[in-house]
Length: 204
Image 1 (cartoon, rainbow, N blue to C red):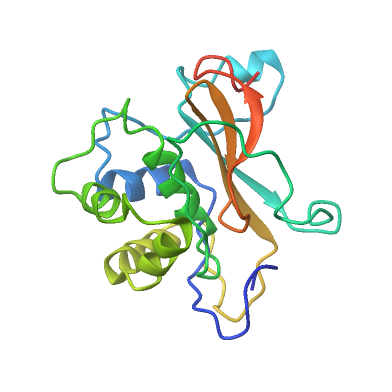
Image 2: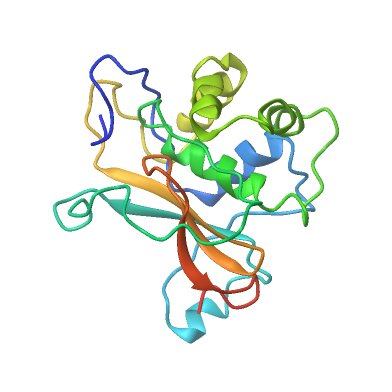
């Protein structure tokens, strides 16, 4: 159970932070392999960042949930000015990896061509005019994505934990929209603005 999960909430198995697993998951849902791929970021030194293929379209960031990271209310943070951000809430326990991937893919569609009729194509078309809460409700009822998530969650190098086991790690997405860097976390009330940036520079 993550810290935002309410008693009785629907819960999925957590995704492993494994680029191979996430790539297969993403490609299977409709991002062609030649359009985008995930890779590890090994550190923030310049020489390590230079190893990351460019341009960087989004970052899925996994961090521990503890007193230091959970000390601020989730609604804190500036909103920024872009009206083109796709954002959704997370109401399914342990779905942060998939919600992070949805945030990433949704906000790079101007640069990445989805496969026509694919899951992503249908999901984003169906939820385009919904608010963040309605998108979360849509996801809760979406058995197609739940099944795909389950396959990905059991495909990693480590055995998936039992559904009853508490998970103290959380995925968020960082991406640039309209020249602004945003943190997209389904536990927050809105996207959090982190200043001007670009696809070419935001890892710096």
